[in-house]
Length: 291
Image 1: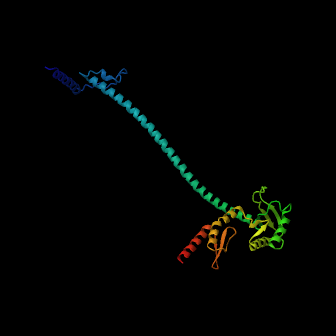
Image 2: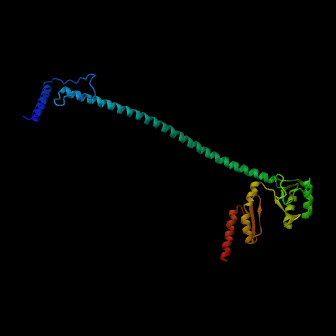
Image 3: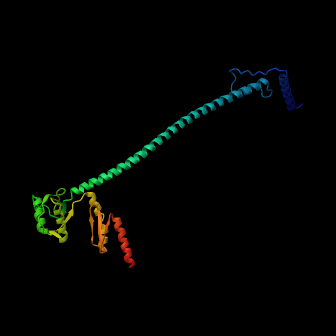
């Protein structure tokens, strides 16, 4: 008989014996293996003629390995669950903080907007007060250095009366601005403060009538003494005023604080910004092209 057939016959006989034991009610041993059973228990098993005990040892070893691995997986799952729970708690806390921060930011925005409006109003009031405190002041440009001597008020009172042919104004004070300049630079501006507002207006009116005021071959200019911001806004009209003069519209002037008054065809128009003047000029140019 060939060896293969003999081997199969022997295996079948072993299985029949196991079946008989089970049929006769003899319990199979399910006891746990001793501590000296290693993870490589399959090496102890007779792979050619496995007995019931060998099968049970293999199953028990497999079960132990499986339980060990499952326990490790379960431990890792518990750790992940703990981390997820911790992250969920942190996310909820972060969302609450973000929500609180958004509410606070909205409140701060409203507060800042109110403060900005209040600051703007206060700046306008301060600018207005500064402008009113300078209403009697004039800036005189072009007077050579040191010609006024030690008494600037007396010099300016006499010179203004003689040059502009008006009643001598009463000046409360007069002085030059900034530090001393060299003789090669433009003379420092003289600021005069009239005791009476009418004297200031009379000086400006007389200077406009005379058109060109000279002192020792120097051209003299009389300008209102304005706050810096107001002066800058008024100077922003220089470009559009030049364009108006090119169009032959000479009847215009800047009025306080920074508006342009224009008279055209016996109609007076007031502009609040240079942009408004530009729009008006474009309309005039469009009408001129159509004609």
